[in-house]
Length: 124
Image (tube, rainbow, N blue to C red; front, side, top):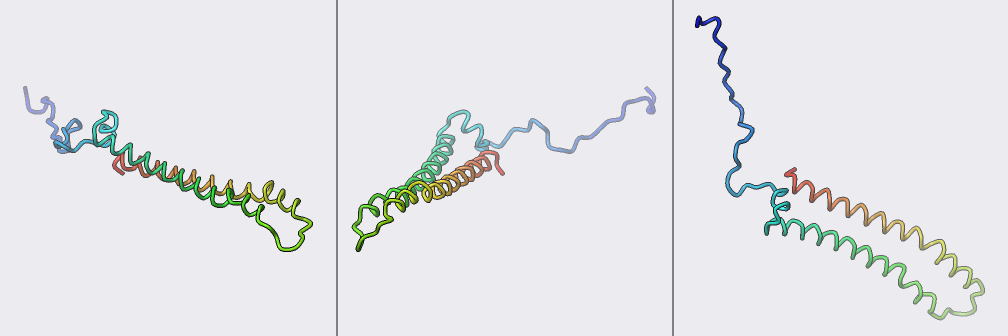
């Protein structure tokens, strides 16, 4: 064949697409999917951080709202005629923003834990 009709040869200089990873360099996603010991450690760490977030939110809720009955049961100095309406106002109105703020804080922390875990798994 004459030189002008022969196909031109291309040289590929990039990394082959199916290049094998070095031994021991497995992505965390495959560790989790294959349920290896390391994958179990990853999942347990996420579960621990989510449990810690939930327990801290519950602890704050118990501290702030759970102590209200003790506060209301405490004897007051002198007579306080508006005690009944104040109790209902605190229990019916003031508690809800506190619960909403605690729930919002918990959700943000749980989402941050999941973002961190996803970054770890995907290698970001």
